[in-house]
Image 1 (tube, rainbow, N blue to C red):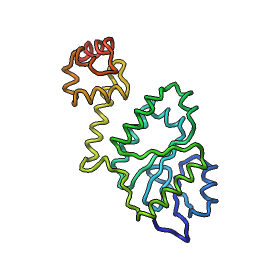
Image 2: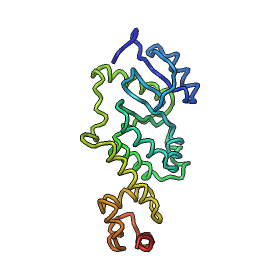
Image 3: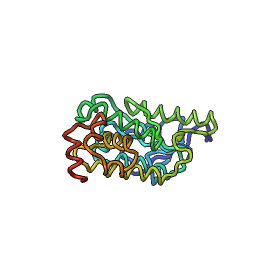
Length: 220
């Protein structure tokens, strides 16, 4: 990683509304800090790595609203490696109304498909340390990040198609994101789903007979 007077060149997005965190960045002797408008992410380090910083509360809300998965697949169009830092404690999950399994499912999905590395942080200070440590790792290995190891040979268009299929399946009765993934894994494509029957649908562990019947009634 390129050092400027032994400091990382750290760029913050003007639109990032985290004044306290910005102050910590500006005052850190290891960083050369500047602010400008970024078209993607919250922070960039030496133009080699994009960081998205989300509190756990924001993360959970974005999952519920569907924004998170749309944003995740947009990273496929970026040549610069992208990393997500989730900041907060488990209390945020308890107060969200979401199950631990649903949150874990979302994290597994973005790790396997968009191929986004996720780091956990307890507080802003730890987030800053994680970003600095990431910069040091990039310097050590000459910026050769392999964070997109799940993407070789697969075009961004394929991932976009996958996202659209999942989005369509989530319009079926009682089907959320995780059940949509399970259905697509079982049938392989939308044609298989549209010609399925109750018996085939209930083979999926998370799909009960009542939900399967509603789906069949809708698609046939």
